[in-house]
Amino acid sequence: MIGSYWSLVPSIVSITLALITKEVYSSLFIGIVIGAIFYSYSTDGGIDGFITHLLNDQVGEGDDAKSYGLIHCLSDPWNVGILVFLVILGTMVALMNKAGGSAAFGAWAVKRVRTKVSAQIATVLLGIIIFIDDYFNCLTVGSVMSPITERYGVSKEKLAYLIDSTAAPVCIIAPISSWAAAVAGFVSGDENGIALFCKAIPFNFYAFFTILFMIIIVVTGFDFNVMNKYEKPQDESCKNKYSGDVGKVSGAKLEVAEYGAGTKTMDEANKKGSVADLIVPIFLLIPLCVVGMIYSGGFFFADNENYMSFIDAFAASNASVGLVIGSLTALALSLVWFVVRKVLTFDDAMSCLIKGFEAMVPAILILTLAWTLKSMTDSLGAAEYVAGLVSDSVSGLQMMLPAIIFIIAAFLAFSTGTSWGTFGILIPICIAVFPVGEPLRIISISACMAGAVCGDHISPISDTTIMASAGAGCKHVNHVSSQLPYALTVATISCLTYIVAGCTQVFGLMASCIFSWLIGIIAMLVMFLFMRNQKA
Image (cartoon, rainbow, N blue to C red; front, side):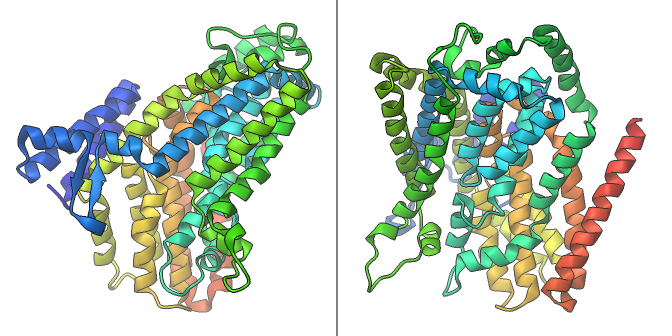
């Protein structure tokens, strides 16, 4: 079963069960168990081998040793860093709520954001501004915009779609982001990874078209039926609940972060709080996370003999460590901000640590299970199996190769729930197949990144998708099912555009880019008008 199509079965079973049962925890765990059974059967490990592989198994020796299982995933330094980062963000959200910052911002924003469309546009703009990291994006945008979007009848599922569509798609086209650093890290040889990443940005059609399609959806008010079943009840609830009472907007708050069993109105919230009590912590996070990233990349340790530029440091950064450094520093400064001004007592501020952890428990559990499932598919050779499919398709299909890579990258990311893992497998293949200066080299690397983001976008076991659900406070399966039609529509257009790019690359990168964009935009408008007319 190792290195064959059987290696994809655990992920497929988990995804299918999650969509059928609408319960993600047991679905992921069943997929993990199936993966451990397959591995034990293939290696004649028996019951002992099954239990070992399920919990903490090490295969190989020395530098070639690899570990798998639940305990390994929970103790992996990278994963632990991400979990700590989540808890810190949850704590900061709890602090902002307890201080009354969220309530004050909600009351302030409702007086200026006066329509459902403007509330969604504000969400999109905030998501684009926060381009450093997708986790940071999902949780920050969710905590800030939840009160405003609920006030104007935007469902949690629609908010999750807006968050998810401005997380990975924005990060993958931002040269200064944890995603750019990850992609650069997979570029081997003497070539500058960040420079290659920047050259590939114009051809990242899925990311750009996702953002463009989302804006069209928001402005026109069009939604697929699967989203409408959440939007219409929310519209009615909003009309009945708020009917012009701006003060009640704070009751829409992030229940998971602070209030748990109930909500607070503006009168019940901390009256000492102001808009600054929400804005200051968030804007502390952004520059400090950037500083944390370049610190982890060695920027502050370089000397005259070993000069390291900002871009080089970002490319060499460890996003997990950098985000913890930045967020932890921001948390400490935020505590000082609240306590010194006597907006919160020290005891109240410390109680938010527990609230923040409680808020993130569902996301932490899903992430842990998703990481473990990925380790099971890794041990079964799923990535290598799909990589083999790519290599086999190279000969004789040069012009179609960008579209093929896009589809395979999307399938691999969908099955494994990881964009970065897909980058690690397919980008080196693209670099090896096409020499420096070849237009298809840039286009294929873009197709790999776009496909990985696409698969990540629609996968129920993707950590970014999980974070978007957590940020919006909606059921994870509801978010996955309601987002699927939008993502698949853009994926279809992107695939067509990569076919055009592959066929026109003989005219040079610039001409291919312009022609592909033109065809892609026309296809998007035609498809949108067709869908709208069909619905009408």
